[in-house]
Length: 307
Image 1 (cartoon, rainbow, N blue to C red):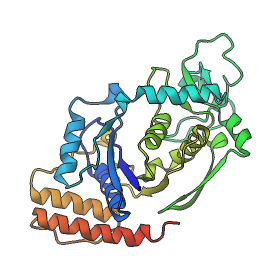
Image 2: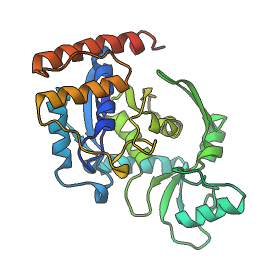
Image 3: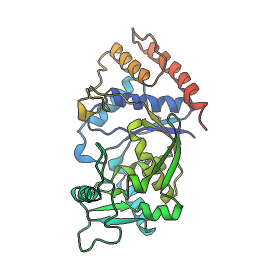
């Protein structure tokens, strides 16, 4: 059974960029005659806004995007993440880390390496051989150890839109965090565990998350999970030329009328390179017809070409 998913963080309402990801993942599941799941990535509790999860579900329903199963919440899945971490500990593939972010950045600077905008510093493996009397703050995946076991730190995969991809995780990321210093689960571990537990076969998400795929491949291998098939969509950009997000002023979707809903869906479809349709009257029948047309277009663009 093909299964896709949309996994928003309930830190606010959906905006134009997040609707693109929702629509793309829904279209993909429909084109593959599969199921579409919704998962609330609310593991980072302090950033979540009360009631945002229900508002997101209302917005999806207004756009005629309905999940095929009960919505899952990461905040209710801690035992799954702990089991995965315990499995990796037993395999000797993780270790406790005492380093602060500032210390890591200083270590990178001392090696003459610059910190790229919006990218975390490459972890140099300081605590890999022990804490040297310091107090553990986080748990990290030992990329070097797993790379030795698998034969290479280079991960290669195929993206259905972007083509063949490759990343040397050891050089470009280093040992990455699975459980944070504040006790919260890191995105990389939670998303890998959830996708496996929910039987997700096809991941469709924004292009800004492409860089995460190699790390998730390594975790999937280490935990004995199957790899989903990936497709990363174009992004909606803000006025500053960067990905539209809540952090750079993205406004909540206006879905206050049938016309507004039609306009929001048309804008999302246009970002995905789908056929521009006349949705002026915006009634339910028109939107349903548009979604059917876009499913067919999506299938021609991506399903037939899937290896």
